[in-house]
Length: 337
Image (cartoon, rainbow, N blue to C red):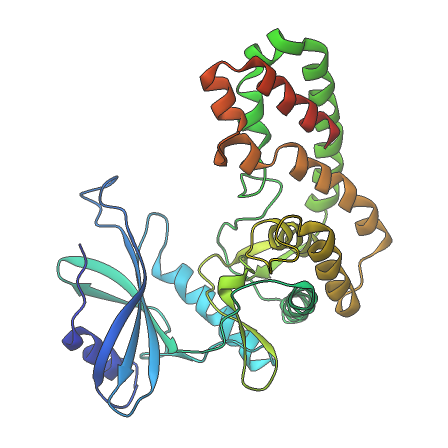
């Protein structure tokens, strides 16, 4: 397991020109991947380090499959470019002209970045926060397009590839069983999927792609001291069609955040329109995009990953338990989008 010491942190402070010495540090987040890849020494570690004069900084240590120093550098430069153009995001520090630097610590080779620590992290998403988030994302999209910003990296919410919201392939892998239960319904679902996916693909493949933050969520947002909504953690930054990013992030925020008690049981009717309203007030949707949204939304809802595999009543669990009635219920929900 990667272990960080104050001496390691002080060395990094010196390399990045951060004045002062480390007084204490805490781990904010750790992912160890050694159970799966013992020889790879893969890790993601985020540390908050405080100096003797009371200032705090965030150090990120990363060794992950398919993540290179150039990718992390490009993500950091994207964040810095947004900051230079008025987006609230933590100040990043550079060492010898680069934000990402490779260190060997305790037998691990890790990519390190350093940034200021910010307070005011958002813990729940209400209607006002959703609208502000939509506005923030639209501003970021405008900057990425106007400045022609790019990060060559896969993103979480590209509907044309594997993504973290929906997956038709995980539904269709059970084709034989689903046809045994209701062949006509399955065929209708597949025909509708082909129609919707084709429409979405034709539209989005024609759109240019620009850099996006890629993970707008309550744990990556904060209320800055100047009253603006800020964003940090560009770990998932990459290029995407901007409308796809907006639509997917809107559904993500409407379904998978923490919400105030008064809307927690059914947040989407409040959060989704608020997010889209905020986004559209800064970056208006075109007529074509407005027409495309229902098709993309139907794909997301029909093959929602939470329903397919991430909850106790998932399709995956229904299939493995042999519950034909529950499987049929999933098929009906998929057919209704």
